[in-house]
Image 1 (cartoon, rainbow, N blue to C red):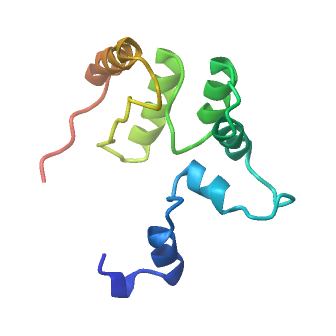
Image 2 (cartoon, one colour; image 1 turned 90 degrees about the horizontal axis):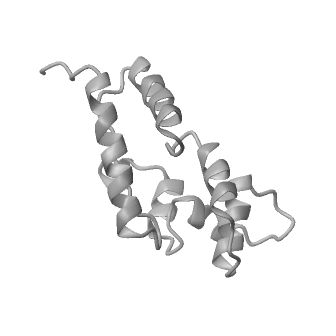
Length: 124
């Protein structure tokens, strides 16, 4: 979309060094009394150096509609929900923070095992 057609709020977000994801949302909250989502609070704890247990992190991130994390069955269910909405392509991001290479590869493999369960997109 040309910048002349983007809303001013989008332009401001694009120029914000904090970024547009959950971390950026957390960083933009200047008022310590402002409400934060559960995910923003966990991100904030991590950014302050706290070691957040994996189970808590995945539980909180799994609540985000824009993220798909969890067991193979949980991922399948979320992917099927997107498919039912007519979405026929998703971008996959498996390398998150200091996640070890072995875990990234496991995530890729498990995701790949689900692919045959979905319809191929129709040709344009």
